[in-house]
Length: 196
Image (spheres, rainbow, N blue to C red):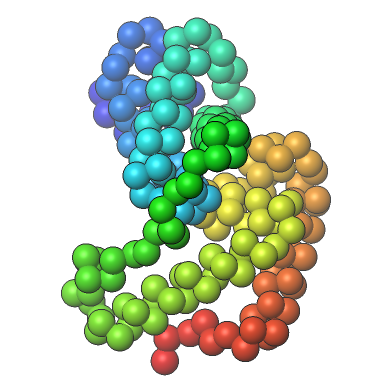
């Protein structure tokens, strides 16, 4: 049986009945979206990998304990677990006054994309990503969360509404205001976010 063709619900059911490969298929299916969501919040590759692993350990434990009720929202549930682990990390960091290394810098010379463009293009692209991420950080928390979940987590507005416990219209409104605020910030800072 090709596990990749099964729905999240079917894979969860098979895992609960003892199929280890089912959980591996689920993790691989959602790996990029979950990892990207974590990384773009914590901005540190090693920390993101640690939280990613902790997220799926917690997912497995929760599934084994029967703490997941499927309603077609497996990815939203996993993202919520990751989000809570991120919050826990920052709370601990604040409590113990831990200092982390400076913002993680992307090594542009260690990128596969270099094969497809010039070093200058890659540097400009890297700067654009940094600038956009900086602008997102300046948004109010509710707007920032919607942008992160939509563009970095890949969630639909329905999933975002469920994840943040608001209506779809509220989620859409927050995205609308986030885009208005981002355009305003781009104008104020006179940023050019295109590769010429």
